[in-house]
Structure formats: C-alpha cells, structure tokens
Amino acid sequence: MTSFPQCAKCGACTAVCPVYQSTGRESHTARGRLHLLETVDPNDPQLVDIFSKCLLCGACKSTCPRGIDIPALIIEARAAMPEITGFSSFKKFLARQAMAHPIALSALAKTAVPLGLIPNLPEHSGLRLTLANQPPGAVPIIAEADIPSTSSPVATETALYFSGCLSRHLAPAIGLAAESLLAKLCGYRLMVPNNQSCCGLAAKSSGDMAQAQDLARRTIALFTGDKAQSLPILTTCASCYAGLKAYPDILSNDSDWYYRALRFSERVWEFSSFIIEHSLSTTPNFQNICKPTPVVYHDPCHLRFAGITDQPRQLIRKAPGLKPIELPHGSQCCGMGGLFHLAHAELSDTIRARLIDDFLATGTELVTSTCSGCLIQWQRGLTAAHSSARVTHLAILLAQQLT
Image 1 (cartoon, one colour):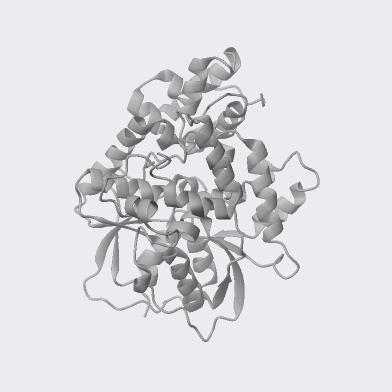
Image 2 (cartoon, one colour):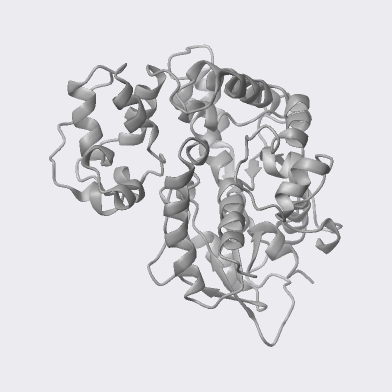
C-alpha cells in the first residue's frame, strides 16, 4: 500500500463527506478508512463493503489539513479487493467490453436498461425510453433541432473533441452545441476523431488499473497523430475531464507512455474554461432577452475540486437570457459516483434527495451541469420528486442563447 502522512484524526473530513452524512458510520469517513487500511486485511469482506461505499468525490482531500490524497488510496485499495463495484461477473464483463470497444458500447446502449446496468429510472423517463427502444443516436435530454447552426466565418483555428459516452452515444446534441459555441464565441472548429473509447475513469475508480491503462493508451494514440499532436483537446463532460487529466498518474509506471501522457494531459481543456480563455469578445453574441430564466448550475465534484467553478458561472452570467441561482446550502455531491449508484442505490438516492430538496426550495425550474453522470442523477431525482423542472447540459443551454 502507498505510504501516506499520519492522519491527525481532526475530523475535518466528517464535515464534508456525503456518505458519512447519510450513514453516520465512522468507518465511512476518510480517517476511518485510513485507519482500516493500516490495520485490516484487504480481503476482509467487511472492508470490501466499506471501501465500495465511497463516491471518490474528493471532498475529503480538499479539506484535509495534511493534504492526504484519500481518493487515490481508496482506488489503490480497491485494486486489491474482489467484487468491489457490486457488479455480477457477467455485467462486469459487459462493462469492460463496452469501455474498450466503441461499437460494443453503442450496442450496449440499446439494452442497458433490460440488463439492469442503469436501474431505477422511472418508466416514463426519456433516458429509459431512449435506451430501451431508440437507436444510440437518440437524445435523452434535449432535441437536436433546438441547437443553432454552427456556421461561422471566423472559425479559423482547430481543436479536438473528446465527446464522452453520453454525447457520443446517447445525446449528440451536446457535441453539436459545443461545436456551435466554439465556432461562434472562439473562432474554433471542432474535429472529432473516430473510434473513441471510454476515458477509463470508471475502470480506474473500481481499481481495474489494467483496463484504465489500456484505455488511456488508446486515447493518447488516437489524439496524437502527426497533425493533431499540438491541438487542444476539449471535453464537455466533467468526469471525462478528470479521467483524461489523470492519464499521467494512471501510466506513471510505464516509462514508454508516461511522458506521452504528460504531454497529452497538458492539452486537455474543460470546455467552459476554454471558452473563457479563448473568447473572441468580452460580450458574446447572446440573445438579448428582457426577462431572464433562473437557472441553477450544479458543480460536478470532478470540477469543483479541480478549481473549475467560476468559469461555467461566468458564461451563464454573460447570457442575458439566463439568471444564475445558487442553492441555499451551496454545492453538493449528487450521489451518482459513477458505479457507486449501481452498487449502493439506496445510499445514492439518499444523498441525491438532499440535493433535490435544496433545489426545490429555490422554486427554480431549470438546472444545468456538465457531467454526464450528474445529469442522469438529476433527471432521475427530479422525476422521483414529481418535479416539472428541466435538466440540460450547459453547452446546450448556452448554445440556445446564441444569436
């Protein structure tokens, strides 16, 4: 096990851990888990259950006065533990095949609900209907017709687009919106390399480092051809951003790939940060609407603890048709946690319910975010609460505001 600084047992992590706040169990705190790492056999079934009940949100790391990287230690521990995700062997096999092979992922999207890979979606959910009955190009969150034209006379620069699984297979409107925003606000055209795979974050989070490394190598190779090796790489998914940025860590023990991973990760941008940095004008061409629509922006944990919180809000504030609203209790984890919501559905729902209640207290009818998992979790939560509020990706919301 990787060595780490001695935990001060200060309890700062208990104030920010969404799992501990739901269960009240000391073993679910960061300090409790660190103690168990030092004292308990990693094959103990109770330890396996405890370490599977972590969202890897990063809240504990951000508040730890000694800077202990608890999520990294938990991932390392999971690698030594069997059946950490709660998947059956068959479902784990399907998940591995889907992450590795784009065609398989498209096929899996059609049958994901019958197999129980995305459980508990309401019967009338657009995403459930899309997965069960529609081709992979169907859109669960918003219609493609609502995205404005991407034509722009000033699109002279080029960036590469890592689409992520949601945009690529289920909601291509996200990519269309990003293309429109980059062309009209930054003068960039987006190129989308074919045969993209999963970013590998799910594999890494579950401790399957061999799979994560394989996916990292595939992606690096795909995005570093002769003409592409110096181009910026954009992604509209917060989880994919975290996954791509982690490639140097994932490949740290591979001397042939580590420096390639470093150069690759330096080119990776989260799309709202890229737009703020490369905008052609301080006053983008958004529609001038007299009565703006209130909207809550949900901070994905992968961006919140990477310091990307103001950039999405800046873009919302620049659109006269939108009025940003903050939650009464501030930013919170939605409880999705990648595979966490599959293994621990009730706990995930409990964490999500607190967030939904906070949102409903604002009276707002619109929520936006940039994480595929968060968007799905919000859609499920609002439907469960019988709310008519709408959920949409930030890129789509902003693209609809363009003139």
